[in-house]
Structure formats: structure tokens, C-alpha cells
Length: 85
Image (cartoon, rainbow, N blue to C red; front, top):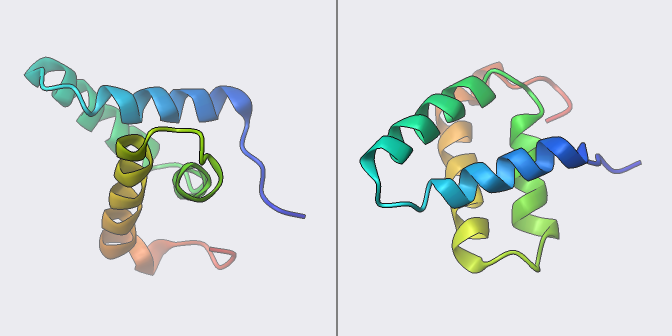
């Protein structure tokens, strides 16, 4: 069975991705803090993969940003990923 996101969690991740596109410095700080918190959850990368690969209806910048964050997470934390990832 394929991994399926929690709808509320998915909406939070999508909102975070959209907020991260804001030029406002205060918003960017909030986004960075939330990203640090979300990176503590093993499923966060699954949400990013889901947005990147399954949500074709989302705008390109949002999906691209999901891929960029995923790439950075893999680069920074691949040693600590759980085995199913």
C-alpha cells in the first residue's frame, strides 16, 4: 500500500511552501523555524515527495520548492533516515 498523507498535515505543508515564497523577512523567519520543527518528523520528507510527485494541480513554484527542500534534507540528513525511506 502506498503512503498516504494526513489531509491536515498536507494542508499545513502546502501552506508552509506557499508562505516560503513570500519576500517578507518576518515570514521567511517563521518558515525557517517551522521547517526546522517539521524536519524532526520522519514523515515530513514523505509529504514533500507527495507534493512533488502526486499534486500535479499545485503550481510549479510550490512543487519545485518541495523538491528543493527534499534535496537539501537528503543531503543533510541521509545518514539518519529510517530504513523504509
